[in-house]
Every structure is written in C-alpha cells, then in structure tokens.
Length: 445
Image (cartoon, rainbow, N blue to C red):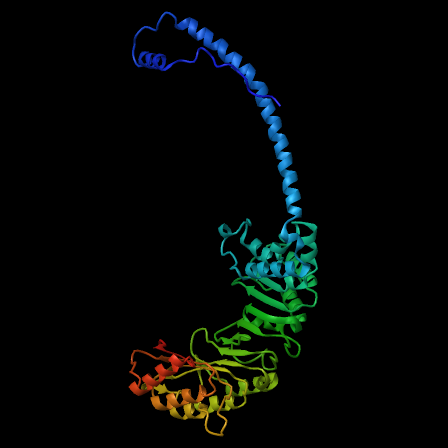
C-alpha cells in the first residue's frame, strides 16, 4: 500500500503575491517581466503533479472496486443473519396476507396517470392477476414457496370490465383461472365491476358462479340483467357479506349483505345461513319494507340461529311489521330504526315508529322476557313523539345486568326538543356508572 509523500511546490504563491496578481487582473497595467518564466515553471510543475496523481487515481479505482466487492459480500453475509430468514412459513404467510389485504383494498386507478401501467384497462388486469403477489414471489425461492403454497393469499378475485380491446377477454379468463387454481378450496372475496358501456364477460361470470359455494364476501356492480350468469345453485353457505348494485334499491346485509335492487329474481330462493348483520340501504329513496319477502328470506336462511344486527334506518316499516320481524330474531343484539314523514296529497304525514308502545315491548319486565332479550345496542332517528320516561325505563331495564348498553337518539329535521330534565339527569348517572353509552344529536332529514 503506497503512501503520499510529495514535497510541497515552491511555486505556490504567498498572500502578497496573490493580492498583487489580483490587482493586476482588475487593471490594464502591464504584467511584470518575470511572469513568462513563472508561467513556464508552473506548467512544468503541473505536469509533475499530474504524473504523481495518475497512479494514485488508479490505486483509488482499485481500492473502490475491492471495497464494492467486500460490501456485496458483507451484505450477503449479513442477510443470512436477518431475522426474516428465521420466520416460520406460517408467519411469513400471515405477513404477506396483511400486505395483500391492503393492496386489494386500495382503489382502482381512475385514469392512466394514476397507475404505472400505460393503459387504464391494464390496472384491472393487474388487480385480477394479484400482481403484487407475483412481485413478492420473485424476491427469493423461499418467498416464492410461501406465495405459491398459501391458497388464502389468492382468496380475492377482482374482475373489472374496463376494455373492449381484442384479446382482453381471453387474457381475463387466463388470469381468472390461474388465481382460482392458486386459491385451492379457500373461501373467496369476489369483486365484480362491469363499467358503463362495457359488455359483460359471461364466461368469467359463469366461472365465478361455479365457485359460489366458496364465496365469503361478494361486491358486485352490474346491470341486473347480467345476474343470471351469477345465479347460485342452492344456498350461499359461506357468505358473510354481499353487496349488489344493480338498480334503484340497495339492500345491504353486511355479515353484511347489500342488495341494490328490488326483492325479486334471482333472489327469491336465496338463502344466507352465515349472515350476522342485515342492513337495508336505498341508493336514492327510502325503502318500502318488503315484509313477506323478508320473512321468507329469514325462514330460508334460519336467521333465528345467527342474525345479530338489523339496520333499518332507511326502511319504511310499520310497528306491527317490525314487532313480527323482531319476534323471530332472538339472537339480535343491535337494532337501528327510524321514524319517517311520508309525502301525500295533503302534505307530509308523520309515520312514527319509535313509540311508547314499541319501547314498552323492548323493555325488560319482571319475570317477562322482553322483545329481543339479548339487545345491547339501540339506535333510532326519531320525531321525538314518545314519552321520555318510557324511553328511560327501557334503558334502565337494559342495564340491570351491569353490562354496557349503547344507544344513539337522533332527532329528525330542525324541530329538536329538549329531553325531560329528570330523564337527562338519570341518563347522566348511568353514563357516570359506565353502563350506558348515550348520544343525542341531529339525524338529518
């Protein structure tokens, strides 16, 4: 290894010489007579320095090359000691699953500038193919083994109809079959989007329907005329969440199910034996309650054995109909209902649902089981046409076991009234005891 040992040049200027040269550069004075010889000597001195520097540069290049090789070897050796290499197969699969869930939940790019792909339709194929998993599998052979041998990583099917281009449907089928194959027999989360103006891919829809017994969640946006391709044979035994957007109405039942269409074909024989939560949500207008159809669905699906939440804020249902529905849902723990004002020829007509009689039915009495004995949450939008003390008695009956009860009271329109002061005081005491979560706020129109 060489060391730098080079005498300092005697031609380096001192401060006085630098100042003198600087003054001459800023004037038109004649240069001193010694300057030509100084320039010649400086040229020779620079050549001498260059001759010494060049081998040093070559030595530096060699050192840098050797160091880069050492750094690479160091990184490789250190990677062998990385904790991730000691993670069990199952833990890696869990980590990949969390990553995949986040990727699948991200919104699809709405235009080409928001994706790394040159065309918008490529983003749909990218999502269908689970390309993020393919990228993970290329990190190393162990990652490849985990990705390709963990069916649950491939449990999301996202089918977006975004193009009419030649070959698009064929490629879609290839990717769909591949993902279904890699998913084995695991439960599926299905997302289908048939964009306006895009012809449906009937073969792809029928292929997904063949696996409907594996559907755990389904989110479908398409014209109702295309649903025949998705008609399930018999029940959907594993379905927990279904969201359909096919027309005017929305019927949401999250573990969770959402129908956005009327109660008719192809759902007249639908059964949902795993449903936990049921919500009715209209996309435009309030939903007229389809009582007979709901009772039939409840019977087919055995809601009495598993339905725990019923959300009817936007459903126009009578008290008699509601009580009949609640009487066959003994496991219900959460209920949301609403008063309504119906427009008629003579103007708006109030249709209160949250009444003294309903609250009395929900109140646990001495030795008499109440309607919905397991109720732990009650939310209502109300015209506040009930007796506040009846409402209080209902709440008191539900906190007697010491468990926390949750209730939201939302007033409709701008005609809020104050609650009775004694009732407010008692509600405050229950909140301080930690047995009641109560809120009183505007519920809009």
